Image (tube, rainbow, N blue to C red; front, side):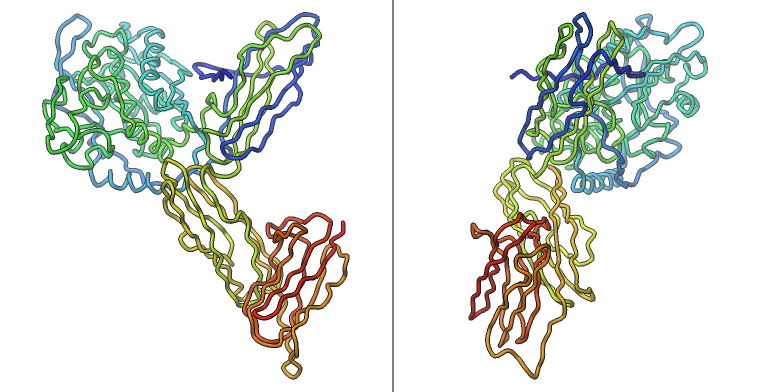
Length: 621
Protein backbone atom coordinates (compact mmCIF):
# COMPACT_ATOMS: atom_id res chain seq x y z
CA UNK A 1 0.00 0.00 0.00
CA UNK A 2 1.32 3.40 -0.92
CA UNK A 3 1.50 5.84 1.98
CA UNK A 4 1.01 9.52 1.41
CA UNK A 5 2.44 11.92 3.99
CA UNK A 6 1.65 15.60 3.85
CA UNK A 7 4.45 17.99 4.82
CA UNK A 8 3.27 21.48 5.66
CA UNK A 9 4.85 24.34 3.70
CA UNK A 10 2.50 27.24 4.34
CA UNK A 11 -0.97 26.71 5.79
CA UNK A 12 -3.35 29.15 7.41
CA UNK A 13 -6.88 28.19 8.45
CA UNK A 14 -8.60 31.22 9.91
CA UNK A 15 -11.98 29.58 10.34
CA UNK A 16 -13.79 26.33 9.56
CA UNK A 17 -17.16 26.30 7.83
CA UNK A 18 -18.89 23.00 8.54
CA UNK A 19 -21.25 22.50 5.59
CA UNK A 20 -24.40 20.47 6.27
CA UNK A 21 -24.40 19.43 2.60
CA UNK A 22 -21.28 17.29 3.24
CA UNK A 23 -21.03 15.06 6.30
CA UNK A 24 -18.47 12.61 7.66
CA UNK A 25 -19.28 9.63 9.89
CA UNK A 26 -18.06 8.97 12.49
CA UNK A 27 -17.29 12.49 13.61
CA UNK A 28 -14.23 11.32 15.62
CA UNK A 29 -11.69 8.53 15.15
CA UNK A 30 -10.14 6.86 18.18
CA UNK A 31 -8.12 3.68 18.57
CA UNK A 32 -5.88 1.84 21.01
CA UNK A 33 -3.24 -0.47 19.57
CA UNK A 34 -0.31 -2.39 20.96
CA UNK A 35 3.17 -1.04 20.36
CA UNK A 36 4.30 -2.03 16.89
CA UNK A 37 0.73 -2.72 15.67
CA UNK A 38 -1.63 -0.93 13.30
CA UNK A 39 -5.35 -0.64 12.61
CA UNK A 40 -7.48 0.70 9.76
CA UNK A 41 -10.79 2.51 10.18
CA UNK A 42 -13.30 3.46 7.50
CA UNK A 43 -15.01 6.85 7.46
CA UNK A 44 -18.07 7.48 5.33
CA UNK A 45 -18.26 10.77 3.43
CA UNK A 46 -21.75 11.76 2.30
CA UNK A 47 -22.44 14.38 -0.38
CA UNK A 48 -26.00 15.72 -0.10
CA UNK A 49 -25.53 18.06 -3.07
CA UNK A 50 -26.89 17.50 -6.57
CA UNK A 51 -23.38 17.82 -8.00
CA UNK A 52 -20.10 15.97 -7.29
CA UNK A 53 -17.53 17.46 -4.94
CA UNK A 54 -13.76 17.02 -4.72
CA UNK A 55 -12.27 17.03 -1.22
CA UNK A 56 -8.57 17.71 -0.66
CA UNK A 57 -7.22 15.82 2.36
CA UNK A 58 -4.47 17.02 4.70
CA UNK A 59 -3.42 15.76 8.11
CA UNK A 60 -1.77 17.75 10.90
CA UNK A 61 -0.62 16.34 14.21
CA UNK A 62 -1.80 18.27 17.24
CA UNK A 63 0.54 19.11 20.15
CA UNK A 64 0.08 17.39 23.47
CA UNK A 65 -1.75 19.53 26.01
CA UNK A 66 -0.15 20.76 29.18
CA UNK A 67 3.51 20.61 28.22
CA UNK A 68 5.78 20.45 31.24
CA UNK A 69 9.10 21.98 30.20
CA UNK A 70 12.24 20.34 31.48
CA UNK A 71 13.84 22.54 34.15
CA UNK A 72 17.35 23.39 32.95
CA UNK A 73 19.95 26.00 33.73
CA UNK A 74 20.51 28.56 30.99
CA UNK A 75 23.62 30.59 30.36
CA UNK A 76 22.99 34.15 29.20
CA UNK A 77 25.86 35.53 27.12
CA UNK A 78 28.12 38.07 28.77
CA UNK A 79 27.12 41.64 27.81
CA UNK A 80 30.42 42.26 26.04
CA UNK A 81 29.80 39.29 23.72
CA UNK A 82 26.81 41.14 22.27
CA UNK A 83 29.17 43.73 20.77
CA UNK A 84 31.17 41.82 18.21
CA UNK A 85 34.63 43.05 17.28
CA UNK A 86 36.29 40.16 15.48
CA UNK A 87 39.25 40.15 13.15
CA UNK A 88 38.28 39.61 9.48
CA UNK A 89 38.95 36.04 8.41
CA UNK A 90 37.37 35.71 4.93
CA UNK A 91 36.78 37.67 1.74
CA UNK A 92 33.62 37.94 -0.33
CA UNK A 93 32.26 40.15 -3.11
CA UNK A 94 29.97 43.10 -2.57
CA UNK A 95 27.14 44.16 -4.90
CA UNK A 96 29.69 45.89 -7.18
CA UNK A 97 31.90 42.82 -7.50
CA UNK A 98 34.63 44.23 -5.24
CA UNK A 99 36.36 41.90 -2.80
CA UNK A 100 35.99 43.00 0.81
CA UNK A 101 37.23 41.58 4.10
CA UNK A 102 34.58 39.85 6.16
CA UNK A 103 33.85 37.73 9.22
CA UNK A 104 32.46 34.23 8.67
CA UNK A 105 30.40 33.86 11.88
CA UNK A 106 29.70 36.06 14.89
CA UNK A 107 28.22 33.40 17.18
CA UNK A 108 30.02 33.36 20.51
CA UNK A 109 31.70 30.00 21.34
CA UNK A 110 30.37 28.27 24.44
CA UNK A 111 32.94 27.97 27.27
CA UNK A 112 34.04 24.40 27.93
CA UNK A 113 32.74 24.38 31.52
CA UNK A 114 29.27 25.36 30.28
CA UNK A 115 29.30 22.65 27.63
CA UNK A 116 29.73 19.98 30.28
CA UNK A 117 26.75 21.39 32.21
CA UNK A 118 24.67 21.46 29.02
CA UNK A 119 25.60 17.84 28.36
CA UNK A 120 24.46 16.86 31.86
CA UNK A 121 21.11 18.57 31.27
CA UNK A 122 20.68 16.78 27.94
CA UNK A 123 21.50 13.41 29.51
CA UNK A 124 19.05 13.98 32.37
CA UNK A 125 16.30 15.07 30.02
CA UNK A 126 16.88 12.12 27.68
CA UNK A 127 16.36 9.69 30.56
CA UNK A 128 13.04 11.30 31.52
CA UNK A 129 11.34 12.35 28.33
CA UNK A 130 9.03 10.67 25.90
CA UNK A 131 8.92 12.79 22.79
CA UNK A 132 5.81 12.00 20.79
CA UNK A 133 7.18 13.73 17.72
CA UNK A 134 8.85 11.99 14.81
CA UNK A 135 9.15 15.29 12.92
CA UNK A 136 9.89 18.87 13.97
CA UNK A 137 8.25 21.79 12.20
CA UNK A 138 10.33 24.95 12.70
CA UNK A 139 7.99 27.84 11.92
CA UNK A 140 9.97 30.74 10.45
CA UNK A 141 9.07 34.40 10.95
CA UNK A 142 11.27 36.44 8.58
CA UNK A 143 11.97 40.12 9.25
CA UNK A 144 13.43 42.09 6.34
CA UNK A 145 15.18 45.23 7.59
CA UNK A 146 16.07 47.57 4.69
CA UNK A 147 17.32 51.09 4.04
CA UNK A 148 15.34 54.01 2.65
CA UNK A 149 17.32 53.81 -0.59
CA UNK A 150 16.06 50.24 -1.12
CA UNK A 151 19.21 48.40 -0.05
CA UNK A 152 18.31 45.06 1.53
CA UNK A 153 14.75 45.17 0.21
CA UNK A 154 14.78 41.86 -1.68
CA UNK A 155 11.85 39.80 -2.97
CA UNK A 156 9.90 37.05 -1.21
CA UNK A 157 11.26 34.64 -3.83
CA UNK A 158 14.73 34.82 -2.26
CA UNK A 159 13.26 34.01 1.15
CA UNK A 160 11.35 31.03 -0.27
CA UNK A 161 14.57 29.83 -1.92
CA UNK A 162 16.37 30.17 1.42
CA UNK A 163 13.72 28.08 3.17
CA UNK A 164 14.22 25.42 0.48
CA UNK A 165 17.98 25.41 1.15
CA UNK A 166 17.30 24.88 4.87
CA UNK A 167 14.90 22.05 4.17
CA UNK A 168 17.39 20.33 1.87
CA UNK A 169 20.01 20.42 4.65
CA UNK A 170 17.84 19.46 7.64
CA UNK A 171 15.14 17.17 6.20
CA UNK A 172 17.32 14.02 6.56
CA UNK A 173 17.19 14.66 10.32
CA UNK A 174 13.37 15.08 10.42
CA UNK A 175 13.59 18.86 10.86
CA UNK A 176 11.49 20.94 8.47
CA UNK A 177 11.08 24.69 8.05
CA UNK A 178 7.76 26.39 7.35
CA UNK A 179 7.67 30.04 6.31
CA UNK A 180 4.67 31.47 8.17
CA UNK A 181 5.25 35.23 7.95
CA UNK A 182 7.39 37.92 6.27
CA UNK A 183 7.45 41.56 7.32
CA UNK A 184 9.38 44.55 5.93
CA UNK A 185 10.78 47.36 8.07
CA UNK A 186 12.51 50.45 6.69
CA UNK A 187 15.01 51.81 9.22
CA UNK A 188 18.36 53.19 8.11
CA UNK A 189 19.98 52.86 11.54
CA UNK A 190 18.88 49.28 12.08
CA UNK A 191 19.88 48.28 8.57
CA UNK A 192 23.33 49.88 8.71
CA UNK A 193 24.35 48.30 12.02
CA UNK A 194 22.36 45.20 13.00
CA UNK A 195 24.86 44.56 15.78
CA UNK A 196 24.44 47.84 17.66
CA UNK A 197 20.63 47.96 17.38
CA UNK A 198 19.99 44.25 17.85
CA UNK A 199 18.05 44.51 21.09
CA UNK A 200 15.86 47.33 19.72
CA UNK A 201 14.67 45.65 16.53
CA UNK A 202 14.30 42.25 18.14
CA UNK A 203 12.10 43.60 20.93
CA UNK A 204 9.86 45.28 18.37
CA UNK A 205 9.74 42.68 15.60
CA UNK A 206 10.02 39.24 17.25
CA UNK A 207 7.10 36.81 16.93
CA UNK A 208 6.59 34.18 19.68
CA UNK A 209 10.16 32.85 20.03
CA UNK A 210 8.87 29.71 21.77
CA UNK A 211 7.27 28.44 18.56
CA UNK A 212 9.10 30.45 15.87
CA UNK A 213 12.60 30.84 14.52
CA UNK A 214 12.89 34.57 13.99
CA UNK A 215 15.31 35.46 11.18
CA UNK A 216 16.44 39.06 10.72
CA UNK A 217 18.18 40.17 7.52
CA UNK A 218 19.99 43.47 6.98
CA UNK A 219 23.49 44.90 6.84
CA UNK A 220 26.30 44.33 9.31
CA UNK A 221 29.43 46.25 10.28
CA UNK A 222 32.85 44.82 9.50
CA UNK A 223 31.62 42.49 6.79
CA UNK A 224 30.02 40.08 9.27
CA UNK A 225 27.96 37.39 7.49
CA UNK A 226 25.72 36.32 10.36
CA UNK A 227 25.29 35.17 13.93
CA UNK A 228 22.93 33.31 16.20
CA UNK A 229 22.57 32.22 19.83
CA UNK A 230 22.70 28.78 21.34
CA UNK A 231 19.36 27.40 22.60
CA UNK A 232 20.50 27.49 26.22
CA UNK A 233 20.99 31.28 26.08
CA UNK A 234 18.14 33.00 27.95
CA UNK A 235 14.67 31.56 28.67
CA UNK A 236 12.85 29.88 25.82
CA UNK A 237 10.53 32.85 25.28
CA UNK A 238 13.26 35.54 25.28
CA UNK A 239 13.16 37.97 22.37
CA UNK A 240 16.91 37.76 21.77
CA UNK A 241 16.70 34.25 20.33
CA UNK A 242 16.96 34.01 16.55
CA UNK A 243 19.31 34.32 13.56
CA UNK A 244 20.77 37.49 12.03
CA UNK A 245 21.96 37.40 8.40
CA UNK A 246 23.71 39.65 5.95
CA UNK A 247 20.99 40.13 3.32
CA UNK A 248 23.32 39.36 0.38
CA UNK A 249 24.07 35.81 1.66
CA UNK A 250 20.65 34.50 0.60
CA UNK A 251 20.45 32.32 -2.54
CA UNK A 252 20.96 34.65 -5.50
CA UNK A 253 22.66 37.31 -3.39
CA UNK A 254 25.94 38.99 -4.26
CA UNK A 255 28.23 37.78 -1.43
CA UNK A 256 30.13 35.20 -3.50
CA UNK A 257 31.32 32.59 -2.44
CA UNK A 258 28.86 32.82 0.46
CA UNK A 259 25.68 33.47 -1.53
CA UNK A 260 24.08 30.01 -1.87
CA UNK A 261 22.15 30.17 1.42
CA UNK A 262 24.40 28.08 3.64
CA UNK A 263 25.32 30.94 5.96
CA UNK A 264 21.74 30.56 7.17
CA UNK A 265 22.22 26.78 7.36
CA UNK A 266 25.28 27.33 9.55
CA UNK A 267 23.65 29.87 11.87
CA UNK A 268 20.45 27.80 12.21
CA UNK A 269 22.75 24.95 13.28
CA UNK A 270 23.84 27.16 16.21
CA UNK A 271 20.19 28.02 16.92
CA UNK A 272 19.52 24.26 17.22
CA UNK A 273 22.51 23.66 19.48
CA UNK A 274 25.46 22.74 17.25
CA UNK A 275 28.94 24.11 17.91
CA UNK A 276 31.67 24.68 15.34
CA UNK A 277 33.31 21.39 14.39
CA UNK A 278 36.71 22.88 15.25
CA UNK A 279 35.68 23.99 18.75
CA UNK A 280 38.47 23.16 21.23
CA UNK A 281 40.66 21.89 18.42
CA UNK A 282 41.96 18.33 18.83
CA UNK A 283 40.51 17.79 22.32
CA UNK A 284 38.41 14.67 22.90
CA UNK A 285 35.06 16.37 23.42
CA UNK A 286 35.65 19.20 20.92
CA UNK A 287 32.04 19.89 19.74
CA UNK A 288 30.44 17.13 21.91
CA UNK A 289 29.44 15.17 18.79
CA UNK A 290 31.06 11.77 18.53
CA UNK A 291 31.11 11.34 14.74
CA UNK A 292 32.55 14.73 13.73
CA UNK A 293 36.31 14.19 13.53
CA UNK A 294 38.47 16.61 15.49
CA UNK A 295 40.15 19.39 13.52
CA UNK A 296 42.60 22.03 14.57
CA UNK A 297 41.39 25.61 14.90
CA UNK A 298 43.65 27.24 12.33
CA UNK A 299 43.62 28.40 8.72
CA UNK A 300 42.65 24.86 7.73
CA UNK A 301 39.02 25.55 8.66
CA UNK A 302 38.63 27.73 5.55
CA UNK A 303 40.19 25.16 3.19
CA UNK A 304 38.11 22.68 1.19
CA UNK A 305 41.09 20.41 0.53
CA UNK A 306 41.25 17.07 2.37
CA UNK A 307 43.38 17.67 5.46
CA UNK A 308 44.05 15.87 8.73
CA UNK A 309 45.13 18.45 11.29
CA UNK A 310 44.54 16.07 14.22
CA UNK A 311 46.48 13.00 13.01
CA UNK A 312 46.29 11.26 16.40
CA UNK A 313 42.49 11.18 16.14
CA UNK A 314 40.40 9.14 13.68
CA UNK A 315 39.07 10.70 10.49
CA UNK A 316 39.98 13.51 8.16
CA UNK A 317 38.98 17.11 8.87
CA UNK A 318 35.20 17.59 8.32
CA UNK A 319 35.71 20.23 5.61
CA UNK A 320 32.28 19.53 4.06
CA UNK A 321 30.36 19.94 7.30
CA UNK A 322 27.91 22.84 7.53
CA UNK A 323 29.38 23.79 10.93
CA UNK A 324 32.91 24.51 9.69
CA UNK A 325 34.11 27.68 7.89
CA UNK A 326 34.56 26.54 4.28
CA UNK A 327 32.47 28.33 1.65
CA UNK A 328 28.98 27.46 0.43
CA UNK A 329 30.19 25.38 -2.51
CA UNK A 330 32.16 23.11 -0.16
CA UNK A 331 29.72 22.48 2.70
CA UNK A 332 26.94 19.97 2.10
CA UNK A 333 26.41 17.74 5.16
CA UNK A 334 25.62 17.19 8.80
CA UNK A 335 26.48 13.94 10.56
CA UNK A 336 24.12 11.48 12.23
CA UNK A 337 25.55 12.55 15.58
CA UNK A 338 24.78 16.19 14.84
CA UNK A 339 21.22 15.19 13.99
CA UNK A 340 20.92 13.39 17.33
CA UNK A 341 22.36 16.38 19.18
CA UNK A 342 19.86 18.75 17.56
CA UNK A 343 17.05 16.40 18.61
CA UNK A 344 18.34 16.44 22.20
CA UNK A 345 18.76 20.22 22.18
CA UNK A 346 15.23 20.79 20.88
CA UNK A 347 13.72 18.46 23.47
CA UNK A 348 15.71 20.03 26.32
CA UNK A 349 15.98 23.73 25.45
CA UNK A 350 13.49 24.43 22.63
CA UNK A 351 10.53 22.09 23.41
CA UNK A 352 8.12 24.71 22.08
CA UNK A 353 9.13 23.71 18.55
CA UNK A 354 7.66 20.27 19.27
CA UNK A 355 4.26 21.93 19.71
CA UNK A 356 4.13 23.17 16.11
CA UNK A 357 1.75 21.30 13.79
CA UNK A 358 3.32 18.66 11.56
CA UNK A 359 2.24 16.05 9.05
CA UNK A 360 2.45 12.85 11.09
CA UNK A 361 3.68 9.46 9.91
CA UNK A 362 1.52 7.49 12.35
CA UNK A 363 -1.79 8.25 10.58
CA UNK A 364 -2.29 8.24 6.84
CA UNK A 365 -4.58 7.53 3.93
CA UNK A 366 -3.77 6.42 0.38
CA UNK A 367 -5.04 9.52 -1.40
CA UNK A 368 -4.89 13.27 -1.00
CA UNK A 369 -8.01 13.98 -3.08
CA UNK A 370 -11.30 12.11 -3.02
CA UNK A 371 -14.33 12.69 -5.27
CA UNK A 372 -17.81 12.11 -3.88
CA UNK A 373 -20.53 11.82 -6.54
CA UNK A 374 -23.79 13.76 -6.27
CA UNK A 375 -26.17 12.47 -3.60
CA UNK A 376 -23.79 9.62 -2.80
CA UNK A 377 -21.48 8.25 -0.16
CA UNK A 378 -17.85 7.15 -0.39
CA UNK A 379 -15.82 5.21 2.18
CA UNK A 380 -12.25 6.25 2.95
CA UNK A 381 -9.77 4.11 4.91
CA UNK A 382 -7.65 5.82 7.58
CA UNK A 383 -4.72 3.80 8.95
CA UNK A 384 -3.19 4.21 12.40
CA UNK A 385 0.38 2.88 12.44
CA UNK A 386 2.23 2.26 15.72
CA UNK A 387 5.37 0.70 14.23
CA UNK A 388 7.56 3.82 14.19
CA UNK A 389 6.42 5.70 17.31
CA UNK A 390 6.84 5.21 21.04
CA UNK A 391 4.05 4.37 23.45
CA UNK A 392 1.67 7.09 24.61
CA UNK A 393 -1.13 9.31 23.32
CA UNK A 394 -1.29 10.97 19.90
CA UNK A 395 -3.76 13.38 18.33
CA UNK A 396 -4.25 14.68 14.80
CA UNK A 397 -6.76 16.66 12.75
CA UNK A 398 -7.78 15.41 9.32
CA UNK A 399 -8.96 18.30 7.10
CA UNK A 400 -11.31 17.76 4.14
CA UNK A 401 -11.38 20.94 2.03
CA UNK A 402 -13.71 21.77 -0.85
CA UNK A 403 -12.22 24.93 -2.36
CA UNK A 404 -15.09 25.98 -4.65
CA UNK A 405 -17.55 25.89 -1.75
CA UNK A 406 -15.05 27.47 0.66
CA UNK A 407 -15.77 24.57 3.01
CA UNK A 408 -13.45 22.67 5.34
CA UNK A 409 -14.56 19.73 7.48
CA UNK A 410 -12.56 18.61 10.49
CA UNK A 411 -12.17 15.03 11.71
CA UNK A 412 -10.34 14.78 15.08
CA UNK A 413 -8.35 11.54 15.38
CA UNK A 414 -6.69 9.98 18.43
CA UNK A 415 -4.36 7.02 18.94
CA UNK A 416 -3.10 5.40 22.13
CA UNK A 417 -0.08 3.10 21.93
CA UNK A 418 0.04 0.57 24.76
CA UNK A 419 3.19 -1.23 25.79
CA UNK A 420 6.82 -0.62 24.90
CA UNK A 421 8.34 -2.11 21.77
CA UNK A 422 10.75 -5.02 22.35
CA UNK A 423 10.38 -4.89 26.15
CA UNK A 424 8.91 -7.88 28.00
CA UNK A 425 7.74 -7.56 31.62
CA UNK A 426 7.21 -10.51 33.94
CA UNK A 427 4.04 -8.80 35.22
CA UNK A 428 1.93 -5.80 34.20
CA UNK A 429 0.09 -5.48 37.52
CA UNK A 430 0.96 -6.42 41.08
CA UNK A 431 -1.10 -7.21 44.17
CA UNK A 432 0.28 -8.08 47.60
CA UNK A 433 -1.39 -8.78 50.95
CA UNK A 434 0.11 -7.74 54.27
CA UNK A 435 -0.84 -7.05 57.85
CA UNK A 436 0.01 -3.69 59.36
CA UNK A 437 3.71 -3.02 59.94
CA UNK A 438 4.98 -5.65 57.51
CA UNK A 439 6.90 -5.49 54.22
CA UNK A 440 7.40 -7.70 51.18
CA UNK A 441 9.61 -7.73 48.07
CA UNK A 442 8.37 -8.56 44.57
CA UNK A 443 10.70 -8.81 41.59
CA UNK A 444 9.91 -7.45 38.13
CA UNK A 445 11.91 -9.09 35.36
CA UNK A 446 12.48 -6.88 32.30
CA UNK A 447 13.94 -8.34 29.09
CA UNK A 448 14.85 -6.07 26.17
CA UNK A 449 15.33 -7.20 22.56
CA UNK A 450 15.56 -3.89 20.71
CA UNK A 451 18.46 -2.50 18.70
CA UNK A 452 18.74 1.00 20.20
CA UNK A 453 19.67 1.50 23.84
CA UNK A 454 16.62 1.64 26.13
CA UNK A 455 16.72 4.24 28.91
CA UNK A 456 14.20 3.68 31.70
CA UNK A 457 12.98 5.20 34.96
CA UNK A 458 10.13 4.35 37.36
CA UNK A 459 7.97 7.21 38.67
CA UNK A 460 5.34 6.82 41.39
CA UNK A 461 3.57 8.73 44.13
CA UNK A 462 2.65 5.86 46.48
CA UNK A 463 3.85 6.10 50.08
CA UNK A 464 3.74 2.32 50.53
CA UNK A 465 5.96 1.54 47.53
CA UNK A 466 9.74 1.68 47.23
CA UNK A 467 11.47 0.63 44.04
CA UNK A 468 15.12 -0.43 43.97
CA UNK A 469 17.10 -0.46 40.73
CA UNK A 470 14.48 1.80 39.22
CA UNK A 471 16.53 3.65 36.60
CA UNK A 472 19.20 2.73 34.10
CA UNK A 473 19.79 1.59 30.52
CA UNK A 474 19.41 -1.71 28.69
CA UNK A 475 20.96 -3.09 25.53
CA UNK A 476 19.79 -5.84 23.18
CA UNK A 477 19.40 -9.18 24.97
CA UNK A 478 19.81 -7.69 28.45
CA UNK A 479 17.64 -8.57 31.47
CA UNK A 480 17.15 -6.43 34.57
CA UNK A 481 15.44 -7.28 37.86
CA UNK A 482 13.60 -4.46 39.62
CA UNK A 483 12.54 -4.77 43.27
CA UNK A 484 9.05 -3.60 44.21
CA UNK A 485 9.09 -3.21 47.99
CA UNK A 486 5.64 -2.91 49.61
CA UNK A 487 5.40 -1.84 53.24
CA UNK A 488 2.41 -1.33 55.53
CA UNK A 489 4.16 0.69 58.24
CA UNK A 490 1.59 2.56 60.36
CA UNK A 491 -1.16 1.81 57.81
CA UNK A 492 -4.68 0.75 58.74
CA UNK A 493 -6.49 -2.23 57.16
CA UNK A 494 -7.94 -1.57 53.72
CA UNK A 495 -7.21 -1.74 50.00
CA UNK A 496 -4.65 0.71 48.57
CA UNK A 497 -3.88 1.02 44.88
CA UNK A 498 -2.24 3.22 42.28
CA UNK A 499 0.04 3.15 39.24
CA UNK A 500 3.80 2.92 39.01
CA UNK A 501 4.79 4.47 35.68
CA UNK A 502 7.63 2.93 33.72
CA UNK A 503 8.98 5.80 31.60
CA UNK A 504 11.41 5.04 28.80
CA UNK A 505 12.78 6.81 25.75
CA UNK A 506 10.53 4.46 23.75
CA UNK A 507 7.28 4.96 25.59
CA UNK A 508 5.56 4.77 28.96
CA UNK A 509 3.66 1.98 30.64
CA UNK A 510 1.57 1.94 33.87
CA UNK A 511 2.00 -0.99 36.26
CA UNK A 512 -1.10 -1.13 38.43
CA UNK A 513 -0.14 -1.82 42.04
CA UNK A 514 -2.46 -2.91 44.85
CA UNK A 515 -1.77 -3.48 48.53
CA UNK A 516 -4.38 -5.25 50.68
CA UNK A 517 -3.86 -4.73 54.42
CA UNK A 518 -5.72 -7.32 56.46
CA UNK A 519 -7.53 -6.94 59.75
CA UNK A 520 -5.37 -7.64 62.84
CA UNK A 521 -4.77 -11.30 63.59
CA UNK A 522 -7.44 -12.92 65.74
CA UNK A 523 -5.25 -14.95 68.13
CA UNK A 524 -6.43 -16.44 71.42
CA UNK A 525 -3.28 -17.58 73.26
CA UNK A 526 -5.31 -19.76 75.61
CA UNK A 527 -6.98 -21.70 72.79
CA UNK A 528 -4.57 -22.02 69.88
CA UNK A 529 -5.87 -24.23 67.05
CA UNK A 530 -5.11 -27.91 67.40
CA UNK A 531 -5.17 -28.64 63.67
CA UNK A 532 -5.07 -26.92 60.28
CA UNK A 533 -8.54 -26.04 58.96
CA UNK A 534 -10.08 -23.68 56.40
CA UNK A 535 -13.71 -22.72 56.93
CA UNK A 536 -16.28 -22.57 54.17
CA UNK A 537 -16.40 -19.13 52.64
CA UNK A 538 -19.53 -17.15 53.49
CA UNK A 539 -21.65 -16.20 51.72
CA UNK A 540 -21.34 -18.63 48.84
CA UNK A 541 -22.46 -17.81 46.17
CA UNK A 542 -21.44 -14.20 46.86
CA UNK A 543 -21.27 -10.67 45.51
CA UNK A 544 -19.18 -8.67 46.06
CA UNK A 545 -17.32 -10.02 49.15
CA UNK A 546 -16.91 -13.44 50.73
CA UNK A 547 -14.97 -14.26 53.94
CA UNK A 548 -13.35 -17.34 55.43
CA UNK A 549 -11.04 -18.25 58.30
CA UNK A 550 -7.83 -20.28 58.56
CA UNK A 551 -6.70 -22.13 61.69
CA UNK A 552 -2.94 -22.55 61.84
CA UNK A 553 -1.68 -24.80 64.67
CA UNK A 554 2.03 -23.90 64.26
CA UNK A 555 4.17 -21.18 62.74
CA UNK A 556 4.38 -21.61 58.96
CA UNK A 557 4.56 -19.81 55.64
CA UNK A 558 1.08 -19.54 54.16
CA UNK A 559 -0.16 -18.82 50.65
CA UNK A 560 -3.82 -18.17 49.90
CA UNK A 561 -4.83 -17.51 46.28
CA UNK A 562 -7.84 -17.71 43.94
CA UNK A 563 -7.69 -19.69 40.67
CA UNK A 564 -10.10 -19.95 37.72
CA UNK A 565 -11.40 -23.11 36.06
CA UNK A 566 -8.30 -23.23 33.81
CA UNK A 567 -5.92 -23.29 36.76
CA UNK A 568 -4.74 -19.71 36.25
CA UNK A 569 -4.04 -17.69 39.37
CA UNK A 570 -6.50 -14.79 39.53
CA UNK A 571 -5.77 -13.11 42.85
CA UNK A 572 -3.23 -13.41 45.66
CA UNK A 573 -4.95 -13.05 49.05
CA UNK A 574 -2.08 -13.82 51.44
CA UNK A 575 1.60 -14.59 51.08
CA UNK A 576 3.37 -14.36 54.43
CA UNK A 577 5.12 -16.11 57.32
CA UNK A 578 2.53 -16.47 60.11
CA UNK A 579 2.52 -17.48 63.76
CA UNK A 580 0.10 -20.06 65.10
CA UNK A 581 -3.42 -18.68 65.39
CA UNK A 582 -6.73 -18.06 63.64
CA UNK A 583 -6.91 -15.71 60.66
CA UNK A 584 -9.87 -14.07 58.93
CA UNK A 585 -9.51 -13.29 55.20
CA UNK A 586 -11.81 -12.01 52.48
CA UNK A 587 -11.98 -11.78 48.68
CA UNK A 588 -13.61 -8.82 46.97
CA UNK A 589 -14.12 -10.54 43.62
CA UNK A 590 -11.24 -8.69 41.93
CA UNK A 591 -8.15 -9.97 40.17
CA UNK A 592 -4.60 -8.83 40.91
CA UNK A 593 -5.06 -5.91 38.51
CA UNK A 594 -7.98 -4.65 40.60
CA UNK A 595 -10.56 -5.53 37.91
CA UNK A 596 -13.84 -7.23 38.88
CA UNK A 597 -13.84 -10.84 37.62
CA UNK A 598 -16.56 -12.47 35.55
CA UNK A 599 -19.36 -14.41 37.18
CA UNK A 600 -18.57 -18.10 37.58
CA UNK A 601 -16.83 -20.76 39.65
CA UNK A 602 -13.43 -20.14 41.24
CA UNK A 603 -11.16 -22.16 43.53
CA UNK A 604 -9.66 -21.02 46.83
CA UNK A 605 -6.28 -22.69 47.31
CA UNK A 606 -4.53 -22.46 50.72
CA UNK A 607 -1.03 -23.92 51.17
CA UNK A 608 1.26 -24.13 54.19
CA UNK A 609 4.54 -25.98 54.61
CA UNK A 610 2.65 -29.14 55.61
CA UNK A 611 -0.98 -28.71 54.47
CA UNK A 612 -2.91 -28.07 51.26
CA UNK A 613 -6.57 -27.15 50.86
CA UNK A 614 -8.84 -26.37 47.86
CA UNK A 615 -12.51 -25.37 47.87
CA UNK A 616 -15.04 -23.98 45.38
CA UNK A 617 -16.39 -20.42 45.44
CA UNK A 618 -19.14 -19.07 43.18
CA UNK A 619 -19.12 -15.40 42.23
CA UNK A 620 -22.48 -14.00 41.06
CA UNK A 621 -23.42 -10.77 39.28
